[in-house]
Image (cartoon, rainbow, N blue to C red; front, side):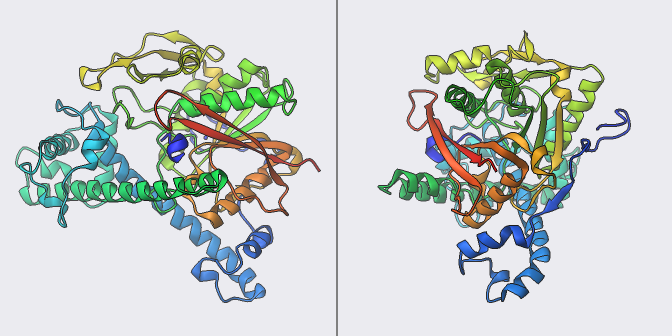
Length: 487
């Protein structure tokens, strides 16, 4: 999800293995140690997680390994709520399972849910009637998903939660089960609306702060209590490109100097929240956008670049592994690039969209958008298999884990957009320590979130770049450049 100013990923046996390969000399995934976390614990003073409070340093060191393992499990458990959010976005904005018009974001927010969400009545408003029609269509789709990959995933997802979509809407429907599943969808929708209202209040409170830096810092942890989501967008990659261009102009990055890069939370499209786009296969964007930029600027060269992605989502990591396996069999990756043609993009944004992919692939005919998708301009790029093959996905929780490797094997560049916003201050400090440990001395982290940097940390904020994508209010990003100081 792109929030911008408003809120701000070796297959040694290609045909047999689908695990993330380890590169020669690289270490495995390890939990952050108590020794690495000591300065962070001292900085947050007594504002520690409840399980760590009122303990002596010796007791803290003894319980730390168990606590960090348990906290990793807690973070991964947030993926469930993120998938429920995905279901709600799909039923609200999707076009592939229904002939009903989409709801707008404001229409969804105005749905008159009461204390019992399942009692939402079609008589209360036209928006409620429309939403209930879409829910009914979704239930029919879950019972008979056909080849719709999103319906297939959601059908499996709700089954894991104990529901039975085929029984609920089959040839002889179980009306009680149908009512139970419908109540689950409606309850999720009501929760999402309540959370959005809470986030909006926090956002407005942050904007009241007179200090812009403090405002940015508050908004950079806005989703700390929300389910983990991995929707993605093209536009933050434009801000990354402009940042790298500015860093190159200042001599912070030299031509050909980027050989090892990583992306934290590369993202995977499911349903676009602006246009409801779900008329093309699920896809990831940021890996290809970053490589495209590095080649365009001459900061990296094909055959010399390694790209690693870090994510806690099995769905994201599996997508990356499949793409890599198919590429090693000679199959290209087709990236669809729809845009809402009525959004008043700035000329430079349109230029970025039109040139995207020219360093890593070739234009191909895009998938045609359905009428329900509204005013859509589309283009598509066939990404060369060699580009896809350079991606190595790693299952890693950036708050609790890092790769155990020596500094000289560290990354030259790590990218994390709309990732740290899902964590509180303490978690962000742990995440920054883990990230720092994986950078080479002089390496950079680029993020569109503000992160707390300790004075004792080898990381420092060098500068930032602000960029607007359109003439719409708050449609942009602030990219902060963090450097691991040279030894």
